[in-house]
Amino acid sequence: MKRGNHGLTLIEVLATLTILSIVGVIIWSVFFQGYKFSKESISKNFMIQETNILITNLKRIHQTSENYRIENDDGKINVYIDGKTSPDVFAPPQMRYEVVVKIKKKDDDSAPAIIGSSDLIVPNDYDVYLEVLTSENGKRENNISIDTFLYRLRGVGY
Image 1 (cartoon, helix red, strand yellow):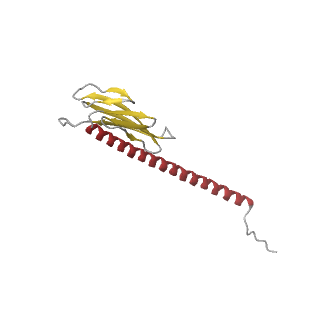
Image 2: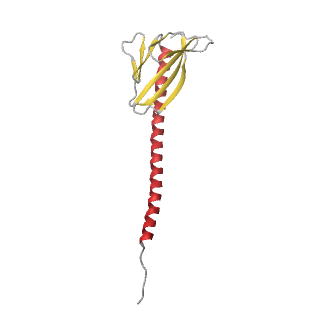
Image 3: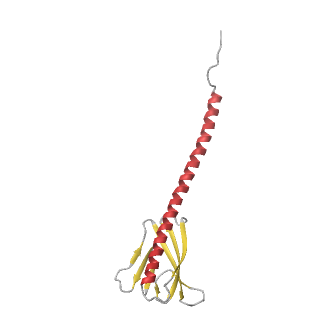
């Protein structure tokens, strides 16, 4: 009688399954880490874009308005301009803004005074330093902070 061993033993099958499981778990975790990183990067880029839009609008308001008032309102920014009945509201979806305002009188070399984050009336003869903090509604740890300076052109009356 001729005996041929043409099969796999139970040990070989279990070893193969174990190795494949380990490789599968490693590939799975790398994939989801990359997906999570990609999602966070997209979110941060979107927050930066929205914050830059806010800053651009605030610069336009600062340069074209005599007096205005910045107000933080539960994640949105309201800007009340003298002569307008309704505020300009900046509230992107799924995000929260918070603005900390520092002002300095033009041609004053001292450090700017920290005013705070609500109800600031900005007169014409002041420059404004802003710190804008933007965060996702559900995730306060995913945020960005941008410091900027709002100026008026010297010698030009608006």
